[in-house]
Amino acid sequence: MNVFFDTNILLDHALRRQDTYASEAVRLLELCEQYQLTGLGSTGSWYSLTYVLRKRWGNTNELREKLTAYLSLLRVISTDSGVLREALSEPRRDVEDAYQYFTALRHGAAYFITANIKDFLPIELDALPVFTPDVFCRNSFRTRETR
Image (tube, rainbow, N blue to C red; front, side, top):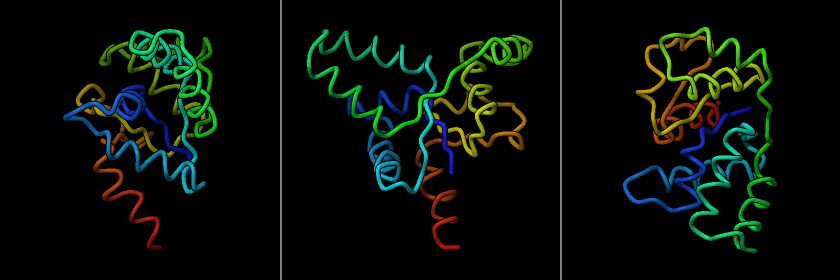
């Protein structure tokens, strides 16, 4: 099952941020490591993740090792001009969030996981359901595991 991780989920994991979904992010990435989920991340997320982590660790081996580890867990998907146009035609949404959402949709994600669910409402949830990590871990994935 393809699951798209918004940038904030990867940052929660990498930075072990307090008062976030860091523990759920650990669980989600473990599921990717166990091949129970296929984690997707956009190239846009990759740039943002690198930028934020570089501010913390500098251009160090630790940074490169962390990014390499994420590459082994996630499939990086691209955003093309068609996705950008579609996102820009969506006036109800923040443009950057729309880029992420339509990139995930274009690449066949079954779910979109984000800490900022309010930024994605109201949307057509039938097209691509949006969940916080805790709700996804508690409901969506567990339901599929027991079937």
